[in-house]
Length: 127
View 1: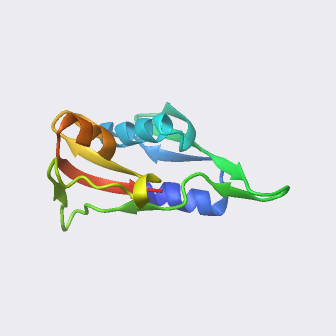
View 2: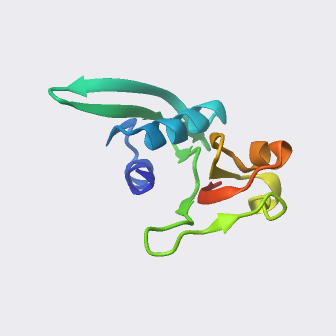
View 3: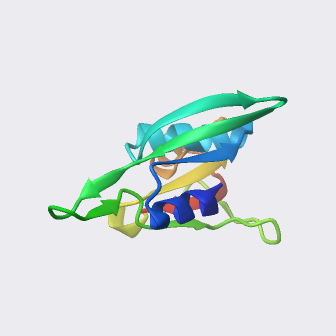
């Protein structure tokens, strides 16, 4: 999912379709809540569901745009899961970015997890 978003933004696409799952939907909702994407929609194609994400761009000059997401980096991978405790949740890029953590109470940003005193699996960092 993260690679599809990264590649679509570098190519300048307006939207990207991703195969749906509950975790991907939760991450997409966080991106929408943090104002990093324009919209999210759940579509059904035959038997399968897709998440359609509208990508957001900022105007940098009269005829140039820059993506709202400069970098999206996967931290916890299948081969090596990265877990953080409630005291180990750090700011991303001195507060300019967000981290997404899967906790026992669901998927949330690092800031929300820190406020709730929760730790969990550090999924990705976005800035």
